Length: 127
Image 1 (cartoon, one colour):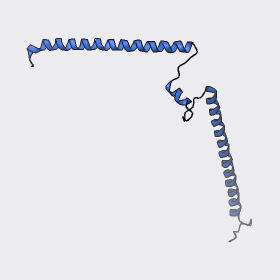
Image 2 (image 1 turned 90 degrees about the vertical axis):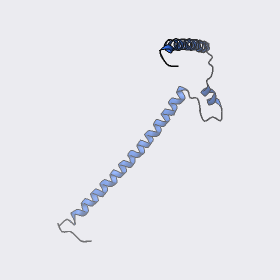
Image 3 (image 1 turned 120 degrees about the vertical axis):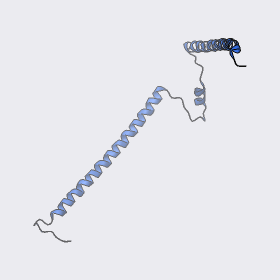
Image 4 (image 1 turned 30 degrees about the horizontal axis):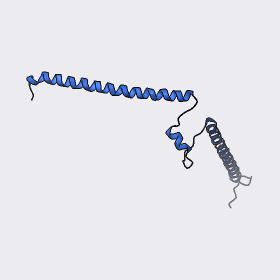
């Protein structure tokens, strides 16, 4: 089946096969593109009329037992504000704790300085 005799018929066959495959793909792609364009035009018409068809995730969010919820921009902004306030409270608590610890450290440092100085006459008392 190989040889110079079969070279030209092979080229002709595979060229026709490729041409037919490309034409079939182009026709299927054109049909898909038309359907896609029609769906987009329908969605645009619904949007311009003020009616929108709800998507899958919107329908899931409306189910009462669903853990998901649709948030408006205002709801989302309120949620972020609450989180920011919570973080500010935590930061204030940490700052207070740091201040308290620094105060204790300074008190310990002063106490250690007084003990190391002795009784004031230069002699150290053994306790």
